Length: 245
Image 1 (cartoon, rainbow, N blue to C red):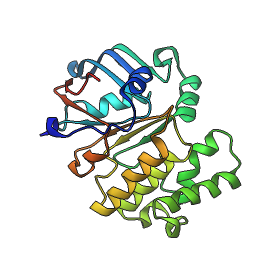
Image 2 (image 1 turned 45 degrees about the horizontal axis):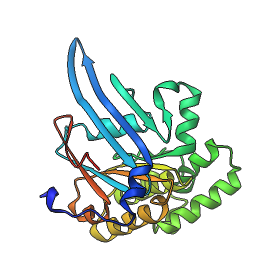
Image 3 (image 1 turned 180 degrees about the vertical axis):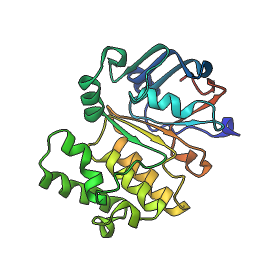
């Protein structure tokens, strides 16, 4: 059971408690189609701390992806507040929100979301180009990051020429390339074998879990539970365990 898994203790408790990278207060999310409303989140209170890798687990449909999408500024809450890296996301809109995400947040999508007309290196370089890097420097950095995830030999291939696991690693390289202060991952090891999954989680910890940074990983993969500093369980749109630090 999840409750029996001991969290990592790589940082002193006082340090972890002092620096919340994410603070969600009373967050609800309602979706409506043809007059029918579905409550996906039901008053979520959660803090995620700097220097930690937080695992968010729970059954399919419990609201995990909805929650991290709002933390990353991809969805707006129906009610409640979300403060990320000291910034209230509700106060950002349009270009300001896009720039905040580009400069601070990396997101690994479960369905990869790679651009089909770009090579692996070009896909990985996109966040740097958006923030103003020259194409030459961005592509050089992208190739170096692809090498870290074991794909240096696939840098010039298009997504259609890559396996599902290879596409996932390109997506992870893209999310890590600008060394985001907050990295959010939706099932980053779901398409990977045990060895590749281990390599990816080690990379995520090494690159993204540092002072001033935080990582949230949604996962069903019990093989990676040992990489978490903290495990938070969701059920039916609520935090059901591990929400209190």
